[in-house]
Image 1 (cartoon, rainbow, N blue to C red):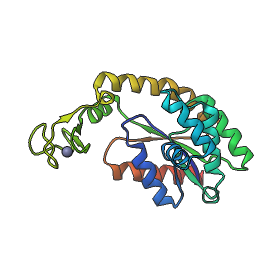
Image 2 (image 1 turned 90 degrees about the vertical axis):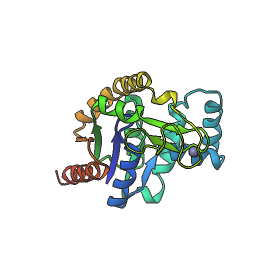
Image 3 (image 1 turned 90 degrees about the horizontal axis):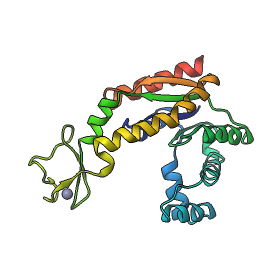
Length: 218
Ligand SMILES: [Zn+2]
């Protein structure tokens, strides 16, 4: 089964992709991992990507899609994959269709995780990072026993700029602007399945797997 997973920042997309991949016995293909792999193995594409990243620039689509293509061409991806972190834009989605056609593959379903913005802001804005050991805590879901002091090393905690409510709202806005055309594109291709991504991790995994099974038998 060839799956693309789409979801907003903070919805637990990476975790779900891993769990769904394990349940369906297909590889979890994360663009983050592909990037890191290419950079650490110093492939030609990795070197190109590193040049842009070191300059603080976005890696161009051509480099990204070439890396994704290399990964999807590996034998283990032939029977299926769950793609996480790509495509993010309409242009990338179109490139993915072309790439899959060249590899003689097809997408089976695009799973979109739907969540409530306020819930995402709550989840993300509660995160605190230890300034000593880097452990991530959460004010509500994983609090320290003494406020603002890491249980493991005693250092103080801070909030990353990325996790401030105003930044989160902006990231969600960017996500929505980029994703809407993507969702329209996949709806047109009759590939889109939408799931409710609120609730516990297990509940969301169960809903995801069910949606994928239904899409497969449809
Ligand atoms: Zn610490």
